[in-house]
Length: 288
Image (cartoon, rainbow, N blue to C red):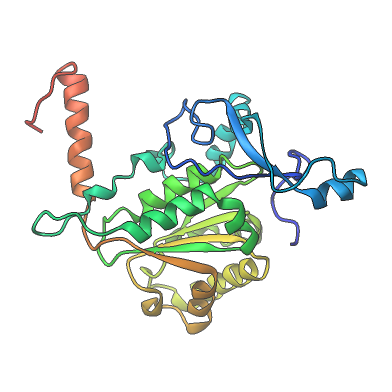
């Protein structure tokens, strides 16, 4: 794989993080070690032979070591990565534990089936090295605006940043127009993980935007770099030509969120929590 934006001298490449714990905690409790201060990993024998001329540890065995994510958080590295990732401010610390799958309900109040979406999301978080190896990303869509697509993509981004040596870049498709200089385009091509938010909602300057998107997406596909998209339309209904749609289909697994707006409910809950905490001093109150 061609060199990208990573500083490969910063971290050793002889281990692969393999934690599969299904539960997550909010920082300062680390979402990698979940407060234990230890993480599990497997050694890469091929790397050891290349560097040391011999295999030092047997493959297929899990080892434990002090959590590297905790150390990177303590030395400020993760905060620096977040500062340049451009994740929306209101989601800058959001983790998957904050994403409420049970909020999706139909008109009768029945919880919608989100099992596939949840399993796929858990997989890219817990088994990211395997997704990265295959250059596999996500296409997160719902036909309903305000259904939580950007929120979910941000939660995923915050978990991926915890992986060693994995910068993330988050950009709205509409903002690509204002960031089309060569150095910015190169950044979108080379960043290990790119999230393009709200693709397919733009019509103005379509031909020009198509050329830019094709360049970015085609290069990323060729280099097998993880790309995540969010959209209000299915891939086949994107306003772009088939070259772009075919590449997105090839690169990504599709995650469909229910056609339910959760933005209003989330805003109401947020205002209620603020009212109880700040105005009522912690009292439970349903006025808001």
